[in-house]
Length: 116
Length: 246
Image: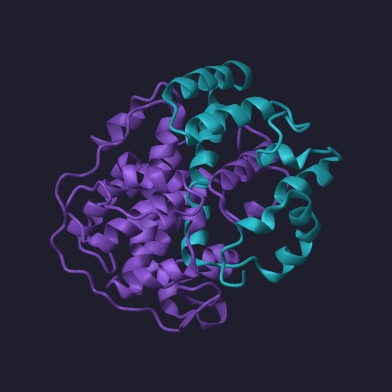
């Protein structure tokens, strides 16, 4: 939802499918394809692929961006686990605000929460 | 020893992030609210080991993890149900169901213990993901555990919901929660409130990894080297990787 809001705020249009795996392009986001590759490599525990992607992130985005990207990847290895293991549903306001986007991207199939 | 790994990183790591990681790692062997230092250390080691488990790998590849029976590859320091809980949380959290949660509680894990186990397994996974991301070795965990007994006391105001685990709603929060809800009361913040000490440990690590409220709702002025849109792109992509609906 915040990616969509960020695009609305800056006037940029992002292909949201690129953030959920259906589309491996950059989605209109600067360095989106590179970020996608780095995420996939790290999350799949592929050391060789990670090393290559890390070098590319370093070259194209710099050291601080590498650290901050790795930190966000780490953070979102946390929130989903806390959410999914306790079964929390979407808050009502998010449920309403994201309904069209969830249908478009087919996200409701992932819902195992208390209200699913 | 903990500090050396991060200090020897080839990349400059923000002080707040370095400090949070060091603190989280150093507390792994300390007594928790419901778990002993020894139990916490065993959970952290098991969380790291879970990725090597063949049963978890088969389940991850299956259409439903609940259709695959077998024995976990484990380190032998935890009861069977605890191993299942740690491994599932680490390797396939996106397909956890209420029935599975109920089965863990029926197998003898107290709800409060589950929350502490969940938090600890998750924090260790986050730290390992970060070190893997920047290409440095995993941080060594403490080898000795605190022998103090946990207090094992619930906060006031506990009710089941909004998911299947008990939590403390903002309107029911007592002094144990301090000012936790002052800066936001989304369900994700509420999810671990059953164990306030662990709740604070979790968010003290997560905030520097991502950002603290109220920055979460800001679209500009984020003090990071990637844009807000890039941050949310990464967040969304990783959440999808874990099959997380929330």
